[in-house]
Length: 581
Image 1 (cartoon, rainbow, N blue to C red):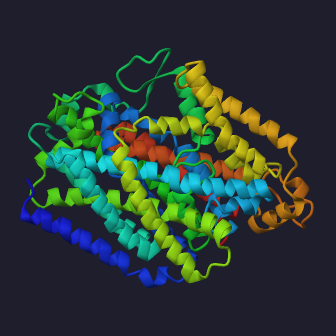
Image 2: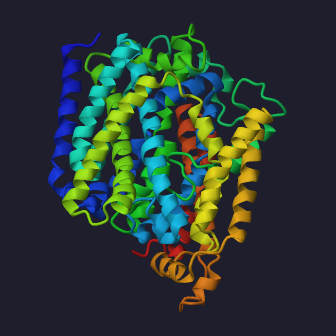
Image 3: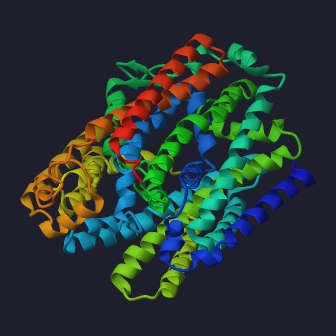
């Protein structure tokens, strides 16, 4: 199946990645700032590409293939809707994260709050995010690679697990030694390889005699598969993505800001916040996050979408949906020439390695900085801290391999995360913009969704979106009540936070203690930038699609909207002063 050339391409890539990663060992070993944030000196394009590479996991093209073959192009709205939350991070939070100058997202808790409640919340989140949730994500990514190996080589899952374990150990080798510097630099190479490879696959698949190019693809696939927007119906019956009114309201009006979700955290968080904090300054942090949103939603999806549509033609015996995942692998196996097969496998290995390396480094940062250094050994030397970081990376690797061996299918995990984080997102947003939020607000918003979700599922037996609305409502009421029943954070502590971060919003009691009370708010300009950037990004996304499908009139319309949105963004971005560095 694979020729000597294919194996040479794969082997050469692995040697290159490990070599680049190891070359940063000395710089990463100086201290935790270098190990976990690359010395806070990343230019925007390195930080931005690293964000995009991390979200390009081995399962991502397969998941898009499943969505498109089942619901058409409009099926992608199940993740396209997160753009609004991503752009919120770009304009309202990226500069604040960089200005906070913390090492991890969890460290922000004790910068913003004080007391035992804040200490408890920081320790709990360090374990929950850094270990528990992290290894589940690692298990999911491993399961995706095992599916790829099974479909391409016919390798059984047990053997695939051993191969995944070997890859994880390889990733752990360079990420534990080189830290974020090595992770980010290898991410850049991995992303370029992955994009080139998936574009080549789309070109080769469309060029087959069976498909016959774009014209042949359009002639042989139902028109509904190329609709860009979902149908809004009174029920859930339809061909392309058909959403009931409740589901539409949930996805497009609530999920992106209300739910905590890995990689799309309201207010920023996780590895996105880590890359923001690694940027040279606030200007680079904003540009990195903006680039991430545009690349994530506009550049990456179309090669995957075109292959997914071609699967309907090439493998009509496969039913749409879950079986289409293996159809994507079959297309790689059956239609790529020698050398390119190896290159595309390299692309999937690259996507896998970039995600795993980030998860390991990001999780280790919580276990080291927010657990060990905060609660176990506050006086650890720089050398001890870096050694613990490396040990934590290896520990996460071992636990991640074990969890992967126990997982058969966790396709429902993402829906579970959306609902069990429902309502938390608003607190993560408002803790930057409302002085009255305290540690008990965030603790309540973290626990309440689990109670409401369990009640709606097991007592009321409600499904999404009804269960989601109940959870958001219960969580919001709970944390608001707790906020007003508990005392606010100490004013001296809030004043120190305000002077360091200089947030906008409802900080009047604290702002009056400074000499900045007369400054004009930039929030209206930020909202205009936010809305313009959403319009611009969606317009670019649709413009590319219409150009591919040769709809010239619609292309001109979307191009015009993108241009106008860009001009508005440029004008008002200068007025926000968030690029003043």
